[in-house]
Structure formats: structure tokens, C-alpha cells
Image (cartoon, rainbow, N blue to C red; front, side):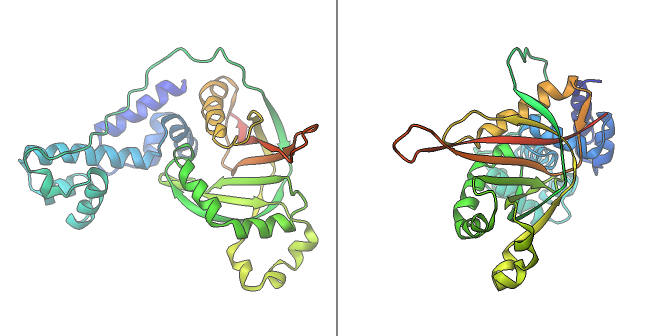
Length: 300
């Protein structure tokens, strides 16, 4: 079964049971895949996590019902899975920008989040350079933030996270044996989001005395053990700001390459490796970057 059919089956199941307690394992079975694989592919293709989709659909439908003015707020809150009117009101205001009681007023502005419908369109016909590599296990050291939502929707958050933590970046960069390489690690994916790390590969002799040398500052960092395994490796073009192009590669790899490859996503961290390089023959100290996107894969 192809991904278009599988995801549509899962969406149909969600919509038919939108007021019931939804089990993500059952949803994944509707697409004939594992919960991890389904949620990762869903979020990459659709642009938001499964949890966001369900929550936004429920709040959209709740707004429609409140505007009709036929049911009590507390009844609608329970109907769409909220345990208390207070938690419903908080989520409702965050989504619609007004309170549930205000939604009953004539002329109230509400937001609509429409049902997903996966349609077949003409895709492909373009070139994507890639390679499949067996990567050894490695240790990375970095600092993290938990982001909600899908990576391709969080460029601004990632940017501000980087700017706010330059000191931590410079500390690791100075200790690294790969000054020209920065790792971005995405891991611990679930229905709401993921952990995002800026990380570097440090020499063993530095890691031995890491906590002692840095003292209290060491508490800002974590050591990440990246398991060995196969990766689909794709590269962005060389330019000043290539990081945004990773999102295009991710969707292209999952929507075009993965379905016909005989592979599926493996439950392991996703890695973006940013390479810095200096242009030869340029009198100015001009530098550019390109990124490698490492998607963990395994044979079906």
C-alpha cells in the first residue's frame, strides 16, 4: 500500500472518531505502519505533527458548535476531550484568539482548520543527489531545546535558539576537533514535537575531564550517543544560508524517494551536518555553507 492511501485511511479514521479517545497505535495501523514511522512521515509530508492536527481539528469543530449556540461550553469541552472547562478555554483562546463565551456572540471571528484530504498530484521529474551510507556509532556533545511542531515549521524558533546560545556554541566549537562542522540533532520525536540539539564531536581526551574543566557550565550540555546504522544522505546547494533547504530535502526524500526505495525510516536521531567552507581565490574572507541531511533508514 502506498503512503497516499495509507495516510488517507488514517485521516479518515481520525475524522470518524474525532470526539473519541484516539490511540496513536490504532491510527498507525490504519496506514499499515508502525506508530513511529507513521508519525514521522505524517509530520514531514503534512507540515505539522499528528497531535497538532487532531487538536486543531477539534478546536475548529468546537468553534463551529459554539457559534451555533445550541450546547453548553462545558458539554462541548468534554465532547472534544478536555477534562475541565478551564483547560478547554485556554486551548480555545490560544487557537481562536477569543474565549468560548465570546464565540457565541454574533459576528465573532473564528478560525477554521479544514480536514486533510490527500490528493494525487504529478510529482518527481527532478533530480535529487543522494547516497546511502553506513555510519559508525559516535558521541556528540550539545545543548538542546524542546520544540513543538514539525521542524520545517520552526525556522524562527531554531534561529532564535541559536542566537540566544552563542556562548554555548563558541565553547563547544573551541573544544571541537571539527571547527568547520556543526551538527543539528533531532530526536525523541512524539506526537507533539521533538528535541533539537546544536552539537559538536569532541576529542576523547576532552570528554574525559569535561565536567571537571567546565564546572557549573557543564550542566548546560548533554552527551548524545548516536547509534551506528544506515542513513540516506542528501546535500543542499552551496550558499550563505542553506539550513532552510533541509526542509525541502526532507519532504522530497520522504515523498518521492522513500516510497519506491524498499526502505523506511528507522527509529534513530535525524542529523543535519552543516559544513563551512571558504571560497578559494577570493580576496575577502568570504565563507559559505552547505548541509548534509542524514535520515536514518532500514530495509522494510
